[in-house]
Length: 105
Length: 339
Image (cartoon, rainbow over all chains, first blue to last red; front, side, top):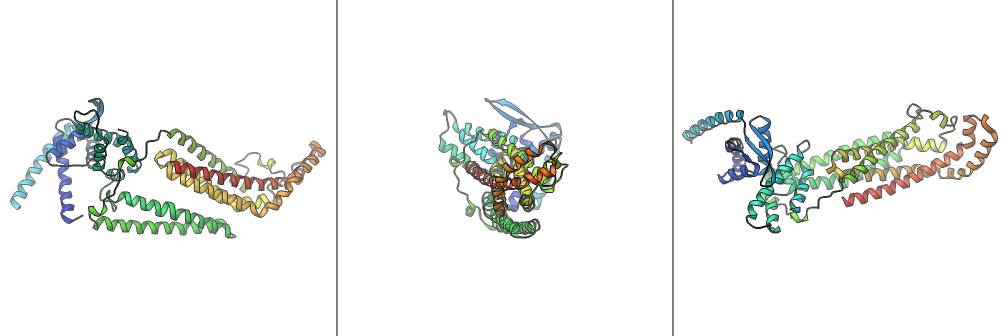
């Protein structure tokens, strides 16, 4: 793995949490969440997404439930109240970092 | 859709220990089926080549499972399938059987079998860890410096094994092996140690000290530690199979190897005492003498009359048991090949 790829992965890792939280302001199940992120140019494999969702849920940021949809049982995720508050804070922090970086770069 | 089941089934055993496997597989299954639905569009069914392409794009089952493990591993998901295969062949199929045979021979050839066996076992552990260290180092270097294109693993979802429905059969077998071997270990240790607490009333069975006779004593003393150890290995392997059904293949291999060793130990121990087998003919004579003596006969007299014949029976028993173990090992090897 070359240096660019390693640094790119590091850069993405932190941003993914923010992207996932933001995408889950409206309820989605795993595949539609992946599609949403991918359509916006943020590809994420299932081995990264599902452990991340589980971690965020265990931290109380997300809520989930298995429900029947289109003839199959699917697990739907959505932001919890705590998650909404955290997203707001993270979003503000993200904007601050982006502004700083904009000036530095 | 059977291909998806086979794909998920192939992922399961490679998921990290302690992870919520059922939940991960349920979500993965839903994820794959959602993608299949989307690609299928208005068609009634997705053609197999398209389904194969979807699964191949997701990656080798082992690589997919490895992504659910902790990050920053020395050997990452792209190399993990080859790493597991190399470790399995080098350690599981080559090193461990060879070292097991070396340990048994070291124990059997020494005048202190237990000490020699333990010493040999400790050296073997060292060899195994050294080998593992070398393999991990080589793969860690590859992980760091090899490019993705050089590490592409060719695989075809159509060649994944079919999903078996015979889990119950394995469970019954595993229970039998586990319980049977624990009982064997307890009984063998009890007789070898002449320990009456584990077997109430054993003093009477000892026929006033006539049992065990010289041949039986020699066989018990030279083998009991090894027999108990191998029986406990079998019990542990069968228990592992019960707790982790996906370990059935590895556990069956361990059981087959340990049972074969058990058979070899029993037969080897009985070999020097085959001449005692001739004394089995004295059993009838002894029984007649016991009958003639009437109810006044005590345990010691009984032992003197029947002891030699029981010694011969013990040798035959060891021989038969050893042969039975070898047959069992063959059956286990056949089960292993079927899994």
